[in-house]
Amino acid sequence: MGVELRSKEAYLKLLDYVLSHLGKRGSKVGDRLIELKPSIIQESKQTIITNFSHLAELLSRDSEHLARFIFKESGKPGMIEGERLVISGKVSPDEVAKLLQMYFREFVKCPVCEGVDTAIVSEKRFRFITCEVCGAKNPVRKI
Image 1 (cartoon, rainbow, N blue to C red):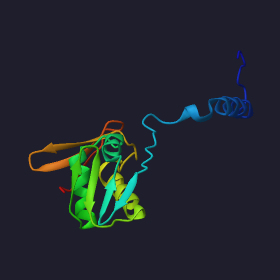
Image 2: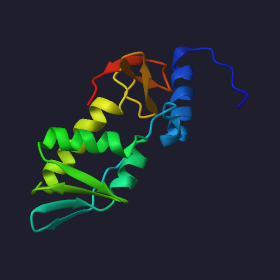
Image 3: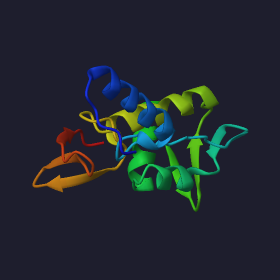
Image 4: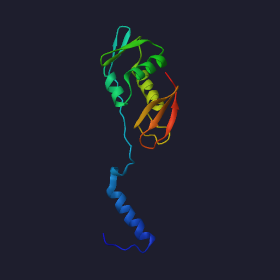
């Protein structure tokens, strides 16, 4: 467009034109959604998350770390069996979803830019969540 901008109105019209053609592509770097859909089976007195390793992979976290969090927060013991997480006792699908959201907010989502491209880093006795998008570094508790 070879248009000369001589007024604020012309500038705003041009800006509206550009923004309307950008659509969804104008999102910030690091904007990404993670959809956690646990596949749960209730067997007698056990709750089994069949896609557990896939969930840990989506969150870019160690499955042992995620499992320890679920065991501690639910107050129920369990173990990892291959791709599955077996929890001793009944845990409702809603409670599992709530636990995954709590883990996501505390150990995955950047508290500064709310991005999901983060890593947990250990330095001396402390653990930090570091954001690959904004560079923020915040302490996290040990599980």
